[in-house]
Image (cartoon, rainbow, N blue to C red):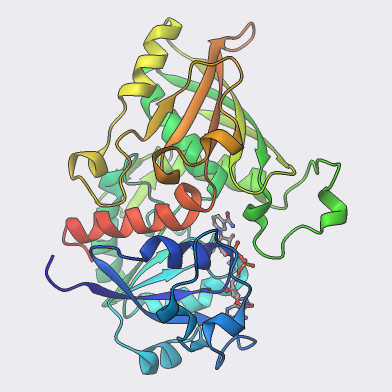
Amino acid sequence: MSMKRKVAILGATGAVGQRFIQLLQGHPWFQISVLAASERSAGKKYKDACPWLMETELPEEIAEMSVVNADVKSVEQAGEVDLVFSSLPGDLAGPAETHFGALYPVFSKASAHRMDKDVPLFIPEVNPDHAEMVKIQQKLRGWKGFITTDPNCSTIQLAITLKPLMQFGLKQVMVSTMQALSGAGYPGVSSLDIIDNVVPFISGEEEKMEAEALKILGKYNSAGCNVQNAIFQLSASCNRVNVKDGHLESVFIKLEQDPIIDEIEEAFANFQGEPQRLKLPSAPVNPIVVRHEKNRPQPRFDRDAGCGMSVVVGRIRKDPIMTFKYMCLGHNTIRGAAGGGILSAEFYVSKGLA
Ligand code: NAP
């Protein structure tokens, strides 16, 4: 790819926006051209608009860029844009992404459009064929651009591990999450609420997990421009824990078949998708990494596997009620957010869709 595509980040000052900035440094295909956020930040230099939370240094050229309002006019005036990454809060993302989608390919981390009938809910390793839906979306809406969405951060890692299990006839999934603080954005959960504590409630999260996984693993029907949901049941219970990054999930699975643990482990470890075949710049070598230690995965040790893009699975064992159970862990702001969004964009670009 000779010319880098110019990208705008909406919500550039937030937990996910900062991760986009970090991961796009030196990206071979994409170059940041516009940073947009709320009117609280607009007009300020990026370094003055928000506290930089990443462990790597804030790049000098980003620090000096002016933040603009997250509306089409302000973004257009601020610089050339070929595609848009959106990490706006869910309630604002709805109308804003519609305006941007009419003109640009929009890769959204927000929940607003995930369940829209003609919008892909996309993980390139899991449902690459769903990307085609944007062609029909463009026709139906008369748009130059489109909207494609990534799932919720706890759903992405779960769906990646469910995909290789579909071959055994997936019937039921029960999942209990232990979700990191960065998942709530910045400043997020108050320290006095979470120190010495676990909060057994994350607003809207269980409903999102239960609905989204069925769409992601469903069948794309090009004639109707929609997705027929996968037929399995999913029940989620979500908790916020005192961990900075990395969601851990305890998963119980009922299958139609009764594979031995070695077969399940092999299915996880050998799982590969289109990003690996296409050797996309952000694709991890292994979308799923299997650990054999009794006490892994753990957020602190495993969230950076595959540069934060691999999902780490462990403790695969038989279950007395369901068929088997396992733990999985994913980095919520990398694979679960900015890294996942960038990988999606790489996929669309490589397929000539964006
Ligand atoms: P965050 O840290 O609260 O950041 C929110 C961003 O949106 C900031 O840049 C903020 O700008 C901007 N914003 C707020 N109000 C705005 C307005 N009225 N107009 C324009 N911009 C506005 O949240 P986050 O964790 O980055 O999450 C962003 C989105 O990604 C959410 O939809 C979230 O559900 C989703 N998501 C988050 C994660 C995660 O792990 N954190 C994972 C997957 C998906 P200011 O600084 O100017 O206020």
